[in-house]
Length: 552
Ligand code: G6Q
Image (cartoon, rainbow, N blue to C red; front, top):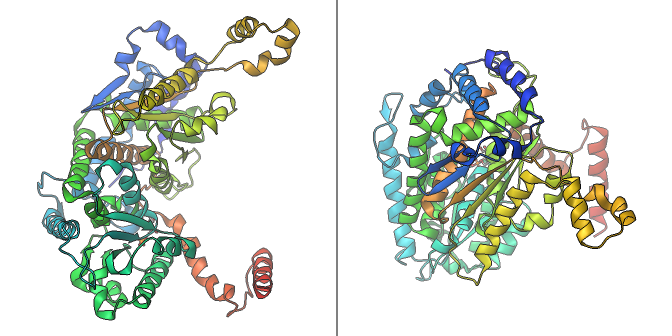
């Protein structure tokens, strides 16, 4: 069982509160002035990745206190529970074993006396055989042509992960295969995707853990109707539709041959299911060996997280820094800023990973928490963000800890784009830390030849307070293994924070209410049921909708 300790009642929390008072106004630059080895002290290396924590508002004493806090909150025991199949998803009475899905060592992992690696291995083989057949053209469509387009139909955890990875690993795409991701129930998403594909050469992967999700099932039904309408026959469905799910009954009911089903298990959370057969589109779009390297990178990070002490443990240190800002500096959000265009879905992916996991307000004692838990996660790739929202990070009123992610080498040889991109990365973290004092701003304006009156008018607006915290993550190149390690690193950070915040990170009851209400409202929106009993605003909206829909 996980501990049920309210972190704010621990001795270390009290010490951290006092420590915060001492440190909160210290300039980031002062930390560097005091310690010439600060960069060395606060940067860590993991394989080909360097993580620099030095531009954060903390000292060695801060990290020592966090190490103690994590001990008090029983972090090591919790990690072991997770890795060994403890039912730590208490409210759903489930184990949490996505780490087993990337246990490429294949060493046994037991759940209720059964070695889960045996069934994982079978599914790996099934995915490898199937994706090889797609890639080498052996798997043919109903007119005998090889498959050229894979359409993954899923939403949330059954969409965001594979899509993010497919985009991030563009240089590794199979030449002949293109993957598409349809998630939104807005008909535009499916309709626009279908315009790009040929029914003779497309394969739909219906990806849904439950196989009951309204959006996915609606999209899947429309895809099947389109396929039949365009010339495919009922008997051809088996070569054009496969399912990834835990619910075989519903898969058969939909009309998919059970032989075309790739299973996974209830101990895989939706937002962690990228590592399960939900990754099938990746096996087809990247090739199984690339997919395997992704798992390998994640597995290496799992070993690091499970075995390293706090002092060397990157996900634990990231977790500590996040808690430091959320609970002591009262930061409400965190930005993830990849300086890599192909990582344009990374922040969105961890928006779900983080906010669905730690967006909770009831603790493991069933009590409402009186401290902040998961922050708001957002972000866009640099340098685009610089020309949009960075203004607020530099000169706004909120504290926004930022993760900058970039790579030494680019896959794209395009003039001097890459050094310029990375110069922006380094410039931003430097500017956030150093800011610009009034004196500096004044001499700049003087050098520009401004009069003293002009300077007086504008000076205050030209000042940057600085001391805005950031963590820099610098990889050698964005390859499969590096991406796998980065994803696992963020996952473990989220888990560790949930342990300290005393919440259950692996359920998502907050998603359920909206799902249930949407199903109830469908007949009302179609005008086939009365809205009686609904609140006045919802009735008003429904009436306006029905009235306006008549006018077209
Ligand atoms: C993730 C959530 C959620 C889920 C989707 C899709 O942790 O549970 O995002 O993945 O609601 O669910 P299905 O895979 O069951 O369709």
